[in-house]
Length: 347
View (spheres, rainbow, N blue to C red):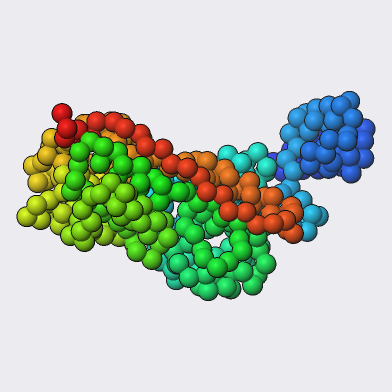
């Protein structure tokens, strides 16, 4: 009879922290400290631990680690419109920081619906996230009282919530709109239209105020007939631009308050058989990847969306680590990027 063969199994035990400590010749506590990034571990010890981790292909158990720390490495992010490239850039900025700090993002899209937003926030609270980053759909802070009562750290982005002491990262859309109108006025435009978005959102009301105040400063006509409103979406921008173009004396230039409405406005202009900038000049909000590729390339008020994401999550992590620190409101600047979509009427 031949020698009996040893039966192999497909199950193989995953390496544990004890296996790492045994191979490195250190305690499990030291392994934990190295993996957590504590700097007081010696260079030699750190090297042995990391070599053992690599040799064993050890993967830390995130859930077990969270239980030991009595905390969580999950962060909830609720944006208002996942189709808007602006928020895609914000999330990329958030992700950059969370990957470095070993946090996981749970992403939700409220779709500009306050009830859907409330449901998403409630679900994230049930997941015991360490903190939340929210682009609010509602302008009343009372709508979020249930969240504030949970004591979960929160950072508000893009849209200001009044009468609350919270960390916020905003963009100076008021100044951005003024830059655009000052530029158009400098080109000789006197009838300048504005396509705004959802009126209850602070970000849209600020851009409208910037538009109106810049018209006043440049001694230009302020008329409600040149004010139209979309719904922050492409269809809304399309309808608003159609209304402006149908006026007996349409504007010679238009500022549109976000990127999706700008796409709708462009569609309406092209369908009307008009040329940019020969028949109408156009300035959009947000510098999207497609803006320089248009014919002609689009002049825009650029917002630092990526920086907003980085700043917001850095603030949130600081708040998680230092819950008693003073709240901050960071307001980022815009840039006017001049391309070829605006005609100089003085030439």
